Length: 126
Image 1 (tube, helix red, strand yellow):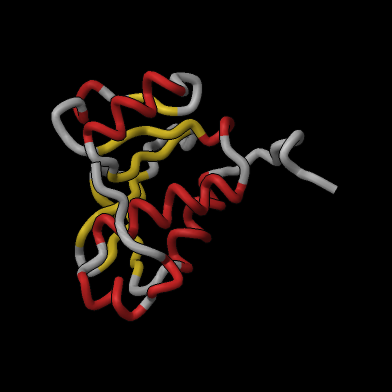
Image 2 (cartoon, one colour):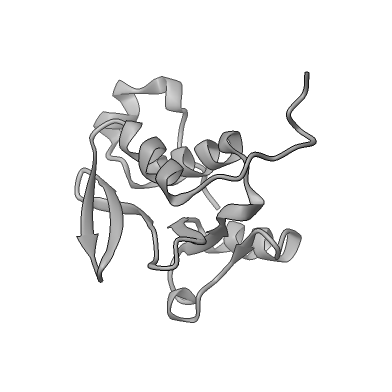
């Protein structure tokens, strides 16, 4: 059976579980919200309302994502100048959530971790 038609809603708990399963990831509270870091570099934040999360995303790709899927991706005003994009949890299933978190992790991870975990692929560049 295909699950592509029905999306099981993911939550901020799923973000935490999947992020912490990535190599060398730690959770740290910053700005009164959970952030997830690899080798000291942040790759996910979960704002207070827990309806979305922010991940690293090259600006060119980010702009394309927001234009293509505005119900899923958006940019917070204070992040407009940075390479981050917000993602609405309600618009994702677990497989897509995992892909997005892994991509953000790859962008933050140092080369030694990327080499040690080839199963996670290489970072997407914009």
